[in-house]
Every structure is written in C-alpha cells, then in structure tokens.
Amino acid sequence: MEQEVDIIGQGSVWQKIIHQIEVVAQTDATVLILGETGTGKELIARELHRRSRRKDKPLVRVNCARIPKELYESEFFGHVKGSFTGAVKDRIGRFEAAEGGTLFLDEIGEIPMELQSKLLRVLQEKSYERVGDVNTRRTDVRIIAATNRDLQKEIAAGRFREDLYYRLNVVPVKVAPLRERKEDIPLLAKHFVEMAVKELRCPRPRLTQGGIEVLLRYDWPGNIRELGNVVERAAILAQGDTLVFDLASAETNPDAFYLQPGGPGELEYLTEAEIRRRDRENIFAVLRKTGWKIKGVDGAAELLGMKPTTLISRIEKMGLKRPC
Image (cartoon, rainbow, N blue to C red):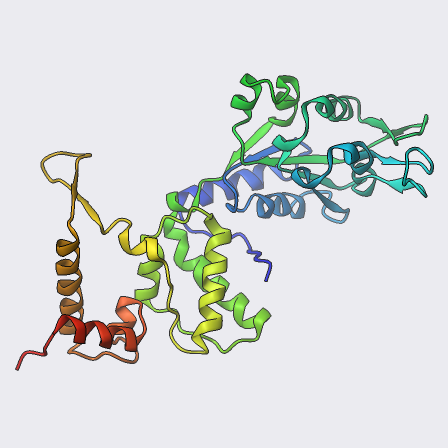
C-alpha cells in the first residue's frame, strides 16, 4: 500500500511548515523542499499546489533519480519523431504536461552536472525546445524542487551548479525528521490505522497507549514512510485485535542506557544482567498497576504493547508471582 497522508501534525515544527505553505502557496515563487527521505516532501509539494492559483491545472512529478542519463532531455522537454533511435513518434515532455500548473522535481540533486545547465536555461528564459526540434516553446509552470542531499556540500564537491541552486532556493522549506517531532506520532499512527482499515479492508485493530509508547521510543530513521509501513504491517497481523509493534531497536533505544545525573552527556552503560533486572521490575510494576490483569482493555499486555501470550511467557520465565 502506497502510504499517503494529509497535513497532520500538532507540534510547533510542523505548524511552522504549514504557515510557510499558507504564505508561499499563493505566489509563483520557486520552492526548494529539504529533508530526509520519507519526511513528507511530496506531501508538502501537493499541498502547495492545492492551495495555489494553479490548483485546477496539472501537478506533474518527476523523480530525477529514476531517469536514465540519456533520456533526461526527452523526459523534461519531449522529442520529435526520428530525433534518436527509438523515437517512433512525437512525445511531449514534463514541462509541457505541466503547462499552467506545477512541476515537482523530486530528488533534484540527482540530475547529472552536464544537464543542469539545460534546466537552468529553462528556469531563466521560460523556454525550451523538444529534442530534435528547432521550434522554441514558451513555458508557464511553477517549479517546486525537493532533495534529501545537502546541496551546498554538493556545490563544494563540484556536483551541483551554484547558479541553479540559487535559482531553485528562492523559498526554502526544511522538513524536520520524525525523531525531532515525536509529538506528531500518535496522530500519524491513528491516521495510518484508518488508512489500513479503509484500503486493506482489514478488521479495525486497537491502538493502545502502550503501543503508542513503543512508537515514541523509536527514532524512525525511515521517518513517516517507515511509520506507515510499521502500522500497516501491525494492522494486518492484528486481525482486529490489539496492535503490536515489533521494533527491536525501540527496545534498546533509549532504554539500554541512561544519562548520568552528575555528568551531562556521559552515559552509564548497562550490563545484560542489569537490563534483565530493570525489565523484570518494569513488568512487575505494570502488573501491580493493573491488579495483575493481563488481557483486555487496560490490561498489562496492552500497556506494555505486547501480546498477552508473550507477556505470560515472560512472567513464567522471570518467575514473577502475584503477592498474597
């Protein structure tokens, strides 16, 4: 299932982005969206188009990382029949397809250096020629670009044109990774549950507070896209029961170490025996909190974000007994 989300977020970081969208959308300014893979850059591009005066015209996306080097010009500008081997008929390019609307150049940092000058010319002169054609065509499109690369480092390394960078970077929008806006995780998780129920037609699972806490402990290197995949997989396996998230790294990050009270930034590493002891104490504390109720709503398994059978197995293995 291809994960797509609406503008969802309640934290200050995401609200700042929404404000930028509101301010910039009504203009024709070129926007450069910066952020890690999976942070929602295409979502922002769609929202900019939806709120713009061009909303009734096409929004055309080009993934610059997936175009073979020899086909860049044809992909962007089109070609005429017979202009090269395989050109059996005229073909319009993405600029022409987006005429009057918005052209979203995703992964702009992947365009080969020798072809960047051709793109720069179109942005400056608002005109281009199809491959093999002598006729110049005018273009009226709004450009939104996105990348997960540091383009200034790419410029320093000689892999990206500085003049093209400044032409694209009229209005920069930086998208923070999910680990820096974890307050949005509960809303996003609930949204992905609804998507799974609707699109996969699976029974509605229960997203518990314990499950949310598991999600909050994880750093999400794959960002929103990874969160969507994790929730979708859990929804399929839940069969209408409680969502259980299998995030091995979430169990050791950040609970495998703790900050020293007397030395900020210094870490007290725990031994395997200490980790087991704390795990035992944690499970015992939750069991006392729930009156040793394991299954069902507000049961210990739900609060811990695990299956009841898993919890029962751990209780037996740890030799935990209910006090008389």
